Length: 185
Image (tube, rainbow, N blue to C red; front, side):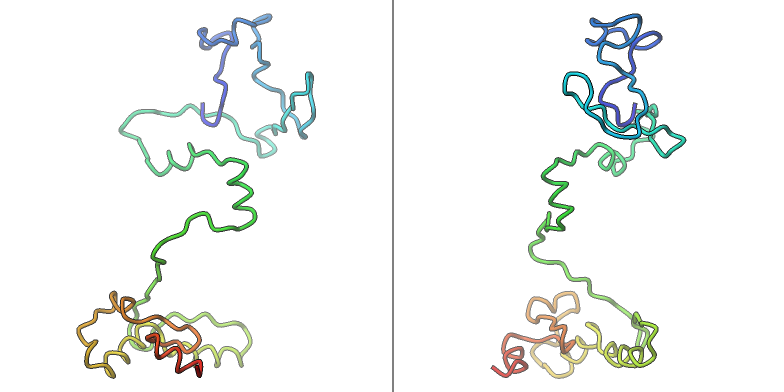
């Protein structure tokens, strides 16, 4: 069964489970299958009775999975089989970085002349400002670098980050000395 810790047991199911040693009247000794409950409460013996909604109210039920190799989906298997600990859950809720990519990856867009992607807010004045600001993209700035620098003419677009950094405020590829000049240092 998908997403079950305890498999189906009792009449008509597997008989080799340890819980059947404590079986009472054909019912699982561990109390499975659990009754539906709208809230989590503290049950008998200080064990919680977890919230378990019926399927009619959006709850989940088990489904038998086909373990055949012809229907194996590696991505779905990873997503459904992974375990998220309490620490990792909190880390995600607090929006801390979980993975640090070294070196950082930058998406470098490619577009035809004057066909770059622009996101505009409903305000007409900000639309004009956005259009003016987005005339220079990483790609158009790359071509500007190629025009002004004889030494870097052999540099491919994908390799520009080896010698230059993208400075978002001026929307230009710059070297370290260019950034100092821009900042007035």
